[in-house]
Structure formats: structure tokens, C-alpha cells
Image (cartoon, rainbow over all chains, first blue to last red; front, side):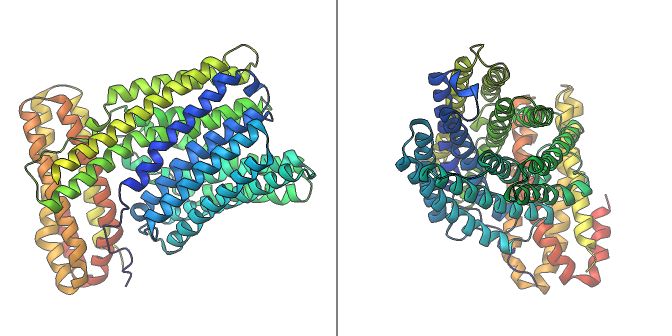
Length: 423
Length: 145
């Protein structure tokens, strides 16, 4: 008899995921700051030092930070398996992730072997702690099979991304050369964006898309094959890069990209057929992110500017999708923890606020609007470099991130206020 | 074990999901007699589901499988939370407060989803294992609406 899933009360303390969620927007604001300060230089080429700094502030500081917090929160719920010593693991991972991202980005922007190696070391250690802890939980996980498989593959992809990143920093810092350096960089970002982020989005999407808006399930063939095939494409690209066939390696990643396009199309179709009528801000963010992903694939497969693909994936998907999810997840976690407390303390005289009062929908919609302006300006700046849209785009990204930060802090302070009432 | 209990009770969960979405759809029309009927239908359906679980399935399961008592307690607690939200929904419909209705339905929807996830993933499979001989009886009762 299976008993591991019997304990139904395994969620981590609310402070663990919230710490990740509350700090992440500051990194997007920082990326916006670099865009505002450096202007056109950022999007002229993906290889400029400042472009690399902005990329890592968004990919690690924003996206990976939220994904780590969400994994620690979701594993007990979606996969029936809690992460061991979750408070200590969460704190250590987050500290190292923050330090590592800042140091690595500073190293890219201003040069300096010490910053690059400190950053890589902190990130390597922080991600190792996370990978081991989450890996142990996923080893025992039951839950819905396709989601557990996708989570395992995403974690493996994070491991490969981190190892490739460490290797690239070693080459940069050591001043040595690596044949086919650009191909290895492509492989690093392929595993990061299509593997770690893309596969995790698919696995989580299988569960939350039908659940959030009452839509039909994803087709079973898609759920069975999408994540494994995406991983096989990346694996093929790795073997081809290692054997010097970088021209063919691109095709392996092309396979993964096409799979994500199919997932995006299926998602838009499910959401179109949803039963819950409201077009809430989470749904708006999902739609813009899926469209951005499809557009990114189109630009990439037709040989368009890599910088535009980067903006669409990093800002369109990497900033957009987690933002939409946070506007739903943080109010629910706040309400749920308060509810739990209320039952435990038997304080039924205190009437709890509903989910929507933690983050008012109107304000969230304004934030989405500012975010869309940022995405539009930055995409245009990347498509047509030199027309002077990078600085306005950076400014809009700062505003969107600070507004998001303020809304999330409001949710947190609302939670704390009611928590005090219950004690 | 064939998932007879899991399938029947999961199907009833989906029936309630559709009814909740229907109340939200009706809210858009602002016809309060229709909204009120839709809300009552939802509340009746969920109360029927709770009754089948609390008065029939859960006691039978606890009797043959004492280790299921702790998760059953958690489920009963969440049912009580949902009943609290039903009361609030009834009040909001009575005073025709659309925003409050939306907020309550959103909260109820999320509470229901995470609750169903646990029942479908843990409790129903346990029940199918432990109550093999009586599975059809519970499945028929939950489908009888």
C-alpha cells in the first residue's frame, strides 16, 4: 500500500516561496535599468557584454528565481512529494542565486575574472543544492505521471545548462579557447530556455491550464511525447556540438522549438474553449506569452535577428508567464494559509478577505498594460536596432517591474495584517 | 484494482466544476433570478457530493483502514471551509453584489481544485483498494442526482 502521499499537509511555510517571488521583480527592474542606461548598445548584438548581463539578470534573477520558489511550493502539491529541509534549502539556494547572478552579471558588464568566477561558483553551489534536494523529492514523487516526468527532465536540463555555463565561464576566465565557442553558447541557452524553462512550463501547464480556467485536458499524445521529444532534440544537439557538427546541432534544437510551438498552440486552443468566462490577468499573460513563444520560433526558424528571438523569449515568455502565474498563486497561497490558521486557531469570528482583494484585478491589469508596452518597445528595438527604442523600452520594463513589486508586496502585507488578527 | 470509486467521484467533481463556471457565466448577464438559481444548483450539487463522502464513503474507509483517518479529517475541514463560502455566496447573491460574487467564486474554485487534487490522488485510490466489494455501491450513489 502506498502511504507516502497520505500526509495531505506538506506545503512549505509561506515565507519560503514568497521570498523568491518578492525578490525576483527587482532583478527585472535591474535589467530595465541596464537597458535604460546603456541604450542601443544592448540590443545591437547578443554578444555585447551588457547584453549578456541583461540576459542573465532576467534568466537567473527573475525566471529561475521564481521557478525555484514555485518548485519548492508545488512539489508537495502536484507531485505528492515534499522537499526535505525546505526552509534551509530555500534560503541557501536563494542567497547563492542572488549573489551569483549579481556577480556574474557584473563580471559580464565590467569584465573581471574575479566577478565571473565568484558568480559562477555561487550559482554552481546554489543550483547544486536545489538540484539535489528537488531531485530527491522527484525521485519519490507519485502524482500525475506526465507532470512528474516533465519536472525530472526540466531538472536534468537545468543541470546541463549549469554545467555548460560553468564550462563557458572557465573558458572566458582562463583565457583559453574552445573550438566552436558560439555553438556551445547556443547549446547552453537551448538547454536553459527550451529545456529548463520550456519543459517545466509544459509539465506545469498540463495541470494548471485545465485547472485554472476549466478547459479540456491537453491531448494525451501531446502530454506523453512533448517533453521527452524536446529533451531528445536537445540531447541530439549536444552530441552534434560535441562532435563538431554545430551546423546540424541547430536542427536538434529546432525540433525542441517546434514542439514548444505545438504546446503553445494547444494551450491557446484549450484556453479558448474554457468554461470559466472571465478574461483575468493570468489568462492575458498566458496568451501574450504563448504568442511571444510562437513568434520567437518563427523569427528563429526564418533566420531573423537573434536579438529579437531573445527579447521575445526572455521578456515575452520568461518575464510574462511567471508574472501572470504570481498574480494568481500569491493571493491563493495567502488566502489558503490564513484559512488554515483560522481553522487551527478556531477564530471563525474573523472574516477573511477573498483572493481578489489581495491583488486587485484592475491594478494587475494596469501592470499588464505597462508590461506589454515594455515588451513591444524592446521587441521593436531588437528588430530594428538604432531607432532609439531601447531606452524607452528599458524605462517601461523598470516601471512594470516596480509596479509588480508593489502589488506583490501589497499581497504580502495584506497576508501579514490578517495573520496578526488571527493570533 | 479498477478505479470505480475514483472514476465516479472524479466525474462528480467535474460536474461541480461545470456548475461553478455556469454561475460565473450567468453573472455576466446580471439577471439575478437566473444567477440565484445557478448558485443554488451549484451549492446543492456540492452538498450532495459532501454528503456522499462524509456519511457514506469516508466512514466505510475509516473503518477498514484506520490510517486514512488523518487525511479524512483534513478533507472534512476543507468541506467546512467550502460550506462557509457557500454561505457567503448566498449572502452576496441576496444583496446582488456582483464583485463579491466573483471574488467568492474565484476563491471557492481554487479551494475546490486543490482539494479535489488531493482526493483524486490519494483518498479515492485508497478507497478503491480497501473497499473493492462495495465500490459499485458508492459509484451508483454518487451518480444518483
